[in-house]
Image (cartoon, rainbow, N blue to C red; front, side, top):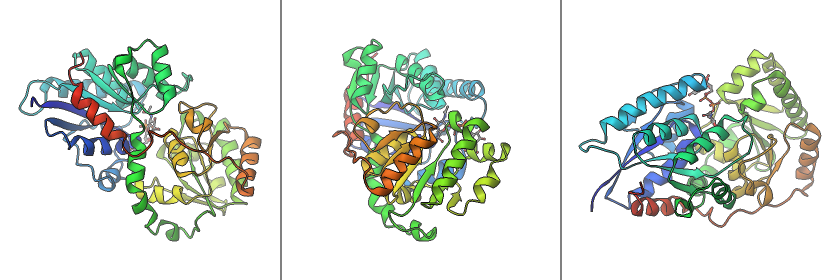
Length: 374
Ligand code: UD1
């Protein structure tokens, strides 16, 4: 069989758990030769290395080491460095047949643009999601990426509708399910058997997990301070574990909010955690308060109430069918949802039947059949 050379891209934390199951599924197709490219958008041990170890993913074949920077700087570095990788081609052969990108981070958009400019087709895993909020950098990344891709691998039905509306041909659309849930289902037993809860003196179902990192929430004191106040108030009723993203740590310090948070006895602040410890915490929590898109999906599958500190979501099934409620920055709504969680009257969600742990296998099959779409 003619070999198919793929460049598979990862860059930032949420990319690793999406790419790991896909690389495993591709092993069933010996003629597919994936080359793993890490842009280096995330580079800290606990935002990057730990995921390679815990997800059993091989080390990147190529590292672009772009690091942090303003959007333009980071995007430009990826464009320049990935273009050179594409021009050099896969080891021992002239050209990559396809690039595979996941999610909606700057690395996703920049590698897609570099590839299509050189005539290399791109497949997008997690295509079609739209928050319709162009103030979010991820929304811009999604729109640009999808408009340039010819293979759109979609996690929930709303994504198919969005892409149809944007004029994509039916032949480009594939409803495949959710690769991040593949990883969750694979590692949940291992995560639950860890002693993470004991380590932080927590009991199953008797604590909440918090994550906050969206620029819309953490980048100004006007948005971050009220959130900090609600967390402090909540922690008087329910202990909270808060692994804090580097962006948020920096903003808490800069806005003089770090001390206020630290003085709250019911809040355990932690550095960003690895996949297994974090899943151990979320899967046994009473409630999750977050602005993460991925966590909305994971909590839906885990059946844990998720109070989402965003005004909108690109993942509508997590709200319409799942366990998530959009509370935005409405402290009263957050309080009343929390009360219903504690009283046991909060809604019970369910999730799409394609979130079954086998999305990556479906994608690998499509990649093996459609490699020459352009
Ligand atoms: C990025 C993604 C976001 C994703 C998030 C997950 C974009 C536009 N945003 O946001 O969609 O949800 O990752 O974490 O792509 N930093 C470190 N160590 C690192 C990387 C970053 O300390 O390894 C710090 C730097 O100060 C950096 C800041 O975090 O400036 C923000 O990093 P960046 O990658 O720009 O955006 P995130 O907020 O992480």
